[in-house]
Image 1: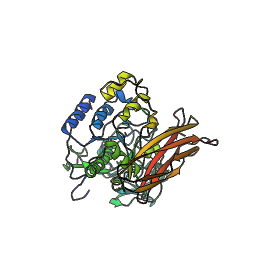
Image 2: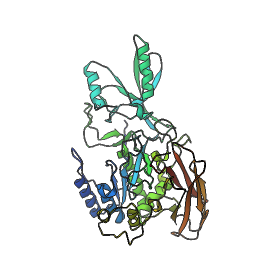
Image 3: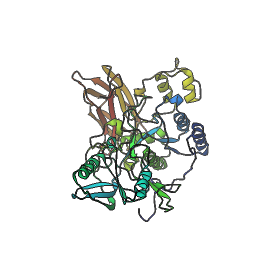
Image 4: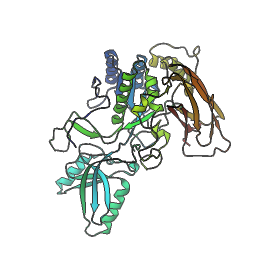
Length: 484
């Protein structure tokens, strides 16, 4: 790849590693590691693990994360690699930052030049293992080609991956191309009695204007465990990421390299963990919820080409793919306002999910009588985003923001309503006179008479001051759980 020094997001952070996986990942080992990390006094937990959606009382990562959150520890988790299907998320608990994956502006380009002079850019195979459909790894596919006397290989990605391509490790010259380009290559082969091709390796190319783009594999919302909480929360770099690697690469190169190029939400999660560590260092008194809010409300929603973030089809990505947007570390360090949540705020939230006393005890590790405790709709949790059921005619929620910007500041709200939904915010101006001052607003969602039927409905509100923009996305789905 290159000579030089690899630097992480928070290069001065002290890392504590806990091994929980061998041939499998035992839930008891995961919980034991989380307990040990809590005892060791870590500030951030980065968990690139997950499974199918479960109720929080049956989700060991959610349980361990709740205990960590109560002790002021920030938890970042992978959203999962089951995209692009909806409702495919892992790690949906609101006390967890759920991180989806996006591309970066760097490409590792290998161009397949056909005999008819058509050129198709793919991704230069280097040191990543991934499946291009079926159960056979690309290294094994390449070995079969090499054993048969082949000189190179072109791999065509699956149709569902759209324009997403990932770097791959190979035992011979090879390139991965997207499904659409693969069809063109097949058409050329079928049109010629003696088709020819050359693979030209162009190395690293910087400046992809479509980045960040949602990775095809990045899991999508809505959340099954808690539909009233918008998930994923945010996107981070997760495609073709250069990362430390503990074992040799299975492409028979004998390079003994300590790095690999990897794709997955397992890569985006630690990027956000690093950002959280930087924010925690700059603002040691901020709670995990405040740090999460800072990242979400300052996230980018436009790509480098100044267009809305795209999905794997090169279409505008919906909010169930992007969450709040793509992380902006600089903006997150100075968000202006934060939506804070105290650990006890989750008590009424859990009661509102209609969990039994035993199920709530499993989460809280203490008894809570919901009959004497206020229950709140999940949408009333002081979360920096909104996920709305459209079945009822009107829903009103409250939010409280804390001033962490200028002591004397005024914020005015800007509303972009989802299609078919009228959004009203009261008051429309928030005037702060001191730091850490808290002010509350109400937001009402009302289905319009001509709502119609849409495939996706999303919008946002932004609180704007002279210096800051504090953005919260809005997602809408109907009462049956169908996205519209």
